[in-house]
Amino acid sequence: MTNATELTGNWPRSAAVFGASGGIGRALCEALAARGAEVVYAGSRRGEVPDGAAFRPFAFDLIDELSIAAAAEMMRDDPPEWVIVASGVLTLPDGTGPERTYKRLDPAVMAQVFALNTIGPALIAKHVLPLMPRDKRFVFAALSARVGSISDNRLGGWHSYRASKAALNMLLKNFALEAARTHSQSVVVGLHPGTVDSALSQPFQTGLAQGQLTAPQQAADNLLSVLAGLGPEQSGRVFDFKGAEVPA
Image (cartoon, helix red, strand yellow):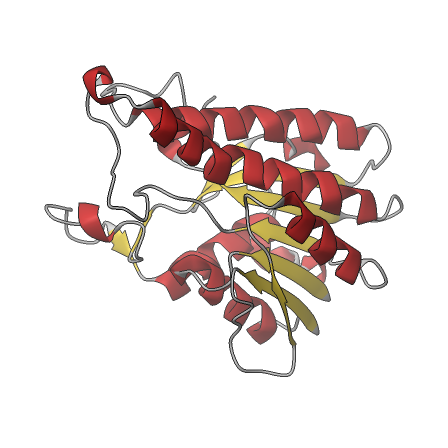
């Protein structure tokens, strides 16, 4: 993979972040603007965005396809060159966390996790990818997780979360293959941000080794540098915050 510092021309003029109110999402918005993006579409359930002239707020809900379709339509006249899905769930709003044993599996919980981690990002791709240009590079990325790797799974547990991210990775591979048939410069990838100091990871930060927890701003810089260095030949894969490929 090419060193990102050699690819300053790959930074986007415009970008969209779905999940802009979360720790990583907000940091991604701010980092994109700081790196020169003139337009940053920033989406959250309430339409909240950072302060700044570059930001274009929009509201969406991962479980409401009509809201996603409306967000994409709003971008149609000036489509983003990069789209990053920075939303997802590890612990549900009612406090239900990852299952440590199959004995705790609950079909309703599994359905919620898949709706937010897998189906929601897929619907964003459904409505945003048709806006992308055929004659130049574009990026579609979604936050995934190393625990979604099947071959790298040595501990088990976290059944719904692991399975939802593994399914997301498969969908991203499918989308990459399909996009490549008509968009030769497309880059469709998953991103593993590491353990970021955010609301998602907060219940699981106890006992982490020194240096294992990353600030959102650093995580955003890491991920953007990885995206800047990826080309069509890497499309369909998952990469961590250092740019190393996460095994399927």
